[in-house]
Length: 265
Image 1 (cartoon, rainbow, N blue to C red):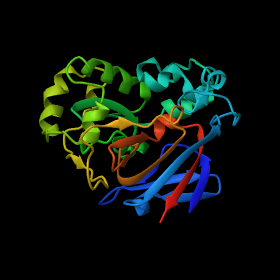
Image 2 (spheres, rainbow, N blue to C red):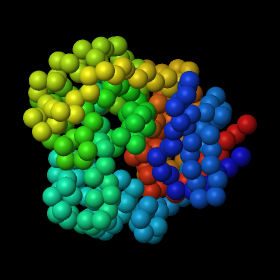
Image 3 (cartoon, helix red, strand yellow):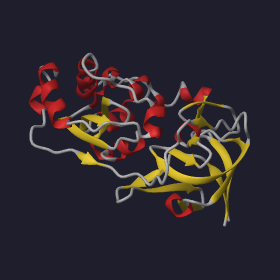
């Protein structure tokens, strides 16, 4: 069976285990159903997620010109503390920025390779944690806009990490942590403007990924260097496909690549 289309981050559904879906223009694939099957991935061309043209992808699935032009790739996406819609100030498109920035946001702790702090829209919980490969997570602050979440994250980064070691996450070399204890310990460092939004009465969320065997020595697949790859899929974690030869493929970091996916039954 063969699928063709432009790669976008896999959609997910909470479950035991988490369910993963690849969406193509006229089709979709439940990736869990092809676990333990031989899969061939072949690069065909580029297709920018915005302009749809066959132009090299620069970042986040966009060609260079789109990345520096469209509102959904503004600096405030990666750095929430730069959000200005709450001040009625435009970056690239104020209507878009108000729509995204002026909605409830969560500051959270997640444990994927170590305990880290992060920010996401409330509507993206637990999707954001799944995408990061976190096996446990907890909300610590719920604020009404992205700016407040951003300045809270910046303050807490002085006391807890804000990056995931993707190799450690994929090897599953992770210790369980008491995230409630972490949450309470970090409360004192939350900025005064965000402190009224501190969450005191929730519990950890635990996530179960469909992986039968974790890689021992991670090898990352780069389709620009290896345009065709064949391997047996044995797991999915975060946005990574894990193959039996320890090769891993980050679907999200390859957004904008038009590929064929062949499942050899």
